[in-house]
Length: 416
Image (cartoon, rainbow, N blue to C red):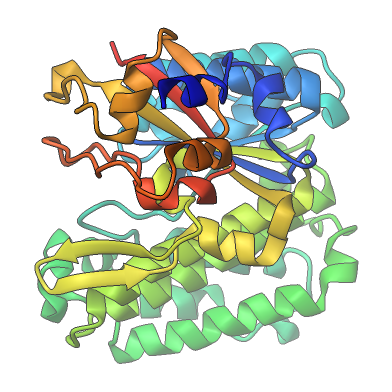
């Protein structure tokens, strides 16, 4: 069997990954089995640099807050702020502290310096403004969308004033209470104010959509607030500002929907929350794909095509991941390459059992390799290897039952 597996092995290079795909995908996702591992982040950076330089990819997105990511995009494209500021304020989940992410942002800025806009690489976060135990207030995105429209359209077209939004939003502490994750009664998501905000957010997004032909070419009217906005993004095109407004609209409506289900008391509560998060991710990924070829990196579970499952305190939870949603829309224009690890010894993940996929790959002489998962599945025959168990909650091993659903596997023998 080892001989057959050896036949599927290629060196870890962008060209080896692309050879597994029928054509260059519009959206190429590199999944990771664990967050924050220096070895994996370094490998990601190496592959992404090659794919940018050799395959023409022009966006790099990671599983981080999509709104905070705008600060990083400003830094890598125009040098706004400093690298330290971008890392501190442009990431969620603590991802800005990872050396691999810092190196990625540093490289992107150096790559873009002096290049015309058409050749620059953009940065994006594709997650919503969500943490494990809390969700952001919709204030920032909802008021930013309102301000964008107010600066460009007649006031009579807007469904409300900024003061109305402010009054309905109230204190941000009401929205960000971490206790609401475990206690629906603490959530304001189904209050009368939240209900009105959902309708107003929908109306604002509809107004944005109906004015698309004008807004993609229009500049802010000459008001104080408009001039301040223009000063902060003086090199941005009307299309860029429109795309940001679309992001604000997606995020505001997504957050309001997420908060609504945080207040839910039914058994389906966690299913709806997990599904809503991945739906927000999918919306951001599809928007990036509209802009041009994009590379994305995050936990493999968000990129898989099969149904996602998780055992939680309320019982089993099942939902479709962002990758499944995007794949249904893009077809072959979406590709998912999973990363697999042999060991993460500093996290208690030791040498994999020989009867698992990771164990079979660990026996190969290569420390790193690219695997064709479909040929691997064929080589393994009708009896798939045993699933690998993990002593660390943060690590997700390969599912042997779904090898052929991946477009590629990058295997790393040891994380250090």
